[in-house]
Image (cartoon, rainbow, N blue to C red; front, side, top):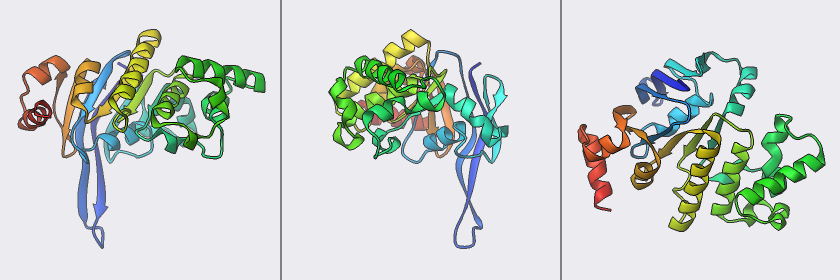
Length: 256
């Protein structure tokens, strides 16, 4: 098994004197096989992004364990995360926010590979940048631009391809197409699908776009109020939902 999320919870203290407990995530369990595309759906504030942050080590669970290839990520020391982050990459909803605004697109493309010593000389970095741009249909001229000078769709393609330059085992896609128009969405999904086929890449696909999840994922889990209320094969969950929240979610999708 590639990823195992076992009875994970995340609690926060709130209120003026921090006496009230807020359950952001409650007793969440799911697992992913190597090469699988797994969808995580639900409304805003249901806990999807909190789970992402816990998998990445940005938040520590209050309870439970997260295993990646059998290794408990909740017990890692800070210096051990660099190795793990090479195998687990993430693409966020707003890619420009992940780029250094003072660096060019050339720098943004090659920064992860440089950080891991995969490219060392300027010539190697230049060749990698040009290869990555070609893979996503962008021109060499754009390497001289800055992140704010390219479109959202171009930035998202660059965000994906630079994450994949490390050849990760798991790519977490946190609402990767929600801010894009339909034609650009199709380009992004086509890119992800081709890399899935070429690299055997596993993806945790987090989205509120049920149409995309239905066409893109093989299995899905439905979240509501910090809990997974239903999970299974996409075709089963979408055709025969069991939980009242799943039924409500799918009804709203069908009437869009």
